[in-house]
Image (cartoon, rainbow, N blue to C red; front, side, top):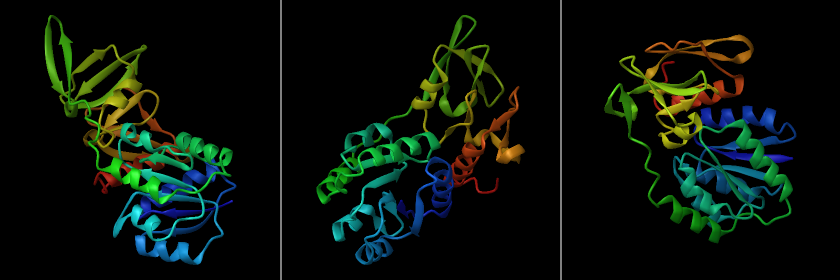
Length: 259
């Protein structure tokens, strides 16, 4: 099975290629393309491919320009940083999407859907037009603050003032940048969905960490990473090999290229 990657960020393209080796080893990446103009030229000259991974916004335009000029002959899986609640509305027959940073589990689901519906027609110009209308709709408003209890007093704390959230003894807790810890009734998965993914990253099952709290990353066994936070967490935060790649891409995307 042959696939094309259209992505203008090299780190994101490399991460997708890495995840595909595990999620779908039968997929061969024929080409990695960075621009609208190069993608148009490729699709005009080539028809022997089965699947396209396409970033929505590229350095020299958006992917709608590609489909408007020459419709690919294969289904498209879009990669995007846009909010999932807005994007869910355009999951048409042959369209799927992956939110950045891409997770291996979601990539596997998208590949599975593609294989199950391989006979369906490629994306149409009309579908792309609907997609682009959605791209200009308002984005999801993420949670900006929490009302926490300290003895008999309730205190509002901004989301950005939390360094990390974690599970301890079955209870979700949050530690602020001034090293104060509070308990929550919510699940860690609920907090992950409510908080801005550009600010918080799910490091593992136990920890949801804020990017400004990350002081350094250390290599660990078998391609894993150890995350060092400030303030320090009580546990050693170990990121799996698959998530380690996503974490690096996420930190690059948010401008912390010095780690």
